[in-house]
Structure formats: structure tokens, C-alpha cells
Length: 329
Length: 295
Image (cartoon, rainbow over all chains, first blue to last red; front, side):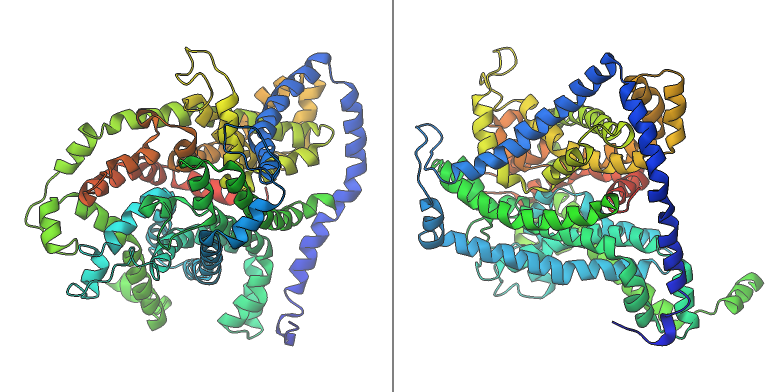
């Protein structure tokens, strides 16, 4: 990570300057806090009432509809509730069944991992690549940008329907383009390959999202940094990987978390295609299937949800600690 | 001519640039191809594409599928359902989120950091994590007969609207709290000097300064709520109450699916977000990136 003399002097400077500029803030804080303390005492009863009612309403919704059910999922996962009867303690049996007697679970877990790897290793770098290309102040940049960004405004369910037109075995465009009309490939029906082509469709949308985030991040990079690196004789790749990319750290974290969350949330596309069966199982579709279907195995579905929760909580914590680190200082 | 020569002399056409453009044109057309294909497929009769495939020259172009989707599938009804859910949800989300953000970063109520974390983290949870108990909860919350056919929150516009509000408030609080923190401290001080209470500081002083952020968030929230598929799917049972994105599945037949009709439906469903995106592209992108870059 230590680099040639190239980038020691010139852009070490702006960095330090930038850090320096945030430093006065803590010293300026105490008086602000004192002033605020005085203000607190000046709250009238009406002020407290307004704050209490509106913040309280938002909290009620957030706790009642988001956090409450999340915690309840945890509790229900230890029961065998079917939605109507009594709650009966079931211990860790649901988890045991999940791991040992429910083959779709492992298929779904594998597909979620594949999904994450595909978005993380292919779609996200591609989005970064497009952002770097479009950041070069070339002509028609707006057109390219809109084209890449277009799928992002579409619902994933619509993306799922479009995927069926492209991948359909008998009439699909893909088989026609690659000239396989005689012995057509059943892209969506073959459980060995369908997850791959569906991930391509998901990536189609993800790339544009990542690109927009990186474009905003790249615009915020101090041009002096790049100039300094060029003057010092760094080539384009060096400038990017050793000078620009490290300054994108906050965007990187956000993109990482968005990628993980999107991979865990993936649902609409496969549900629109075949409700997540026959090779397209995902943890999310198994949950929905276990509660909406006739089975109504709420305890069992909750156990799957808890596994999803456990994975996401780790990443949410990483994200929050990154985002709020500045405030903690 | 001379101007062109001059400009060329000033900035010579680099072969690398041409290569870059060639690459970008190719890729961006490829990126748009699936969309163009859907539009194209929706304009052709099923019998024709069934015989020749979607990737073929047309014999006949027809708008019949749009007429079918519009009339037989009763799309207008579903658009209306979506409006009934999204418009109040956006207004309520922005109101609650902006007030909570105001309480966090301007008033700095005690525990504001915990509030911020609670709201932000809630928005990052995968929906499926909470969907099961939410479904059960909705079946338990009673509503009077005039508000709900099921006598519970389940299968009501209100229920779907509320979960949108609860879920999206998290994101908006996060964005707006950062935005408001960047506003100069002096403005609220001046308002306090004038004896403005908390409500007036919020409504008359802070909120007008947040218009750009609110516009960006409203655009983004519209797209997200409009595009939502899961909430209505799980929290509603009457097919005719579904919002449009979830209703798209209805265009699929039980035994036979006319994909061209489905394509027309998909185009019609995508149209509003596409229009909003083109009109408000700046707000849209600002909304997304507000969340990722501080302030």
C-alpha cells in the first residue's frame, strides 16, 4: 500500500487540509452545547407536547410495524405456530428441521450466496467501471448515463417480466440471437442455469444504481488530487487505484451494504418469474411460501427469517458504525 | 469549417476517445435492448411472435394489447389503487421524517443518536424478516366495518400505506437529519430570539430550507412505493385492491400466458416511473446520492 514518492507530497496536503478543516468543529462545540442547554429549559409545555406527539407517532409506527415484528420473528421461530392455534414452544426444532429435513433451504442459501457474489464481484465493479468512464467529461455522457440508469427506475417485478421475454425458450430473443432456434435452451426452465440468467437480469438493474452512487462520489473527489498524481507521473490506472479509489471509501461502504442488502432482499424478480421454484429458490421466497401458502407454517417461516436477519444485522452494524463515526468524534 | 479545424487543432481527436465512445454506444444500446424488445413485443400479435419469435421483423403492428390491458385487465383501477396508497404515504412519510429529523439534528432532543440509529437500521432490514409477524399482526388489529371489509387492518389500503410509511420514514430521517445538520445554526437562533416555538421553527423556518431535499425524496419515494411488490402481495388478499405493480401478475393466465399482453402490461406499469424519471431526473439522482454522501 505504500506508494512511490509520486503521491507523497502534493495530495497528502489537501487531505491534511481537509482534516484540518473539520478540526475546529469540536473546539467550537462546547459553546454550542451550552447554548443548547439554555434552549432546552426554554421549551414551553406546548413545545414538549408537539415533539412528543409527532416523534411519538413516528416511533410508534417504526417500533410497532418494523422492530416489533422483527423481534417477534425471533420469538416465533422457536414455536410451531400455524397462525390459528395456540403458541407452543418448539425449542430449536425449526432450525434443526431447516438444516436437515428441508432441502429447499440449502438450495435457497446457496442461491442467495451466488446472488451476493454475482452482484458483488461482477455487477458492482461494472457499475464502478461505467462511473469511471462517464466521469471523464466526454460528450453524450448524459445519454449514456440515462441508458445505464434506466433499469433502476423499473420495478424488479417488471424486470422479471422483461426477463421472460428475453429468455423464453421458444420465442425468446436470446435464443434467436445466438441462433439456437432448432434446439432451444430453456433458460428459465432448466434448474441448473436459470439462477444465472436471472442474476444477469438483477445485475442489469444493480449496475446502474452502483454507477450513480460512484458518479456522485467521483464528482466530489478533489481534482487537484488527480492533477498532482498526473504531474508526478502516475498513469491513469495508478492514479485511480492509488489516489482516487482510497478517497471513495465512504461510497465503497455504502455500495457494499446496498449490494448485500439487495442480495438478501432479492425476491420480486424470481417471484414474478415462477414464484421462486424449480431452481430459483431464495430465502425470501421460502419465507413467503411458508406463510402465504396453505401450509401457513409461521414458526418455520420465522426461523428462515431469523437466519436472514442474523446475516443482515452484521452488515447493518458495519454500515452504521461507518456512517455515524463522524458524529461520534 | 475553420472553427472545426481549429477546435480539432486545440483538442485532437484521440483514437482512444473514439474507442471509448464506440464501446459506450454499444453497451448502452445493449442496456436499452430489453426495454425496446418489450415495447416491440407488446405491439405484435401473439400468433405472429409465436410463429416467428420475438426477434423477428413484424408483419403487423397493433395497439390491441394496450387496449386489452387497459380495458379487460382494468388497469385504470389498479393505477387508482396505487395512487390511493402512495400519495398519502409519501406525504405522511415526509412529514414524520422531516419532523423527526428536525428533532434529532436541530432541537437535539435527548437520545437523538439512538433515534437516528433506530430509524436508519429499521430501513435496512430485509422486508421478509418482519413480514410473517406483520401479517399476523395485521389480522389482529381490528378496524370498524366502514374502514375495512375484513374488519382488520389486513387487506386494506391503510395497512399497506402504513407499512410504507413506517419503512420509508427510516431512510428519509437519515437523509433529512444529515441535510438539516448542514443548515446554519444562526437561523434557528434568530427564530428562537423572536420567540418561535418548536412547531414554528420546524414549519416556517426549517422546512422551507429543505425543499430541495424534500423534492428529491418525494421523487425517490414515489418510485420505491410505486415499484413495491411484496407488501401488497402479502398484506392484501382481494385481487381488485392490489396496487398496479402487484396486479401485473394478474395478467398471467392460469394455464396459458400471453407474453405479448404481459409485455404491454409491463410497459404500462413502467410508464409512470419512466415519465417521472425523465421529468425529474435531477431530483431522482439527488435523492439516491443524498443518502450516500453526507450533507
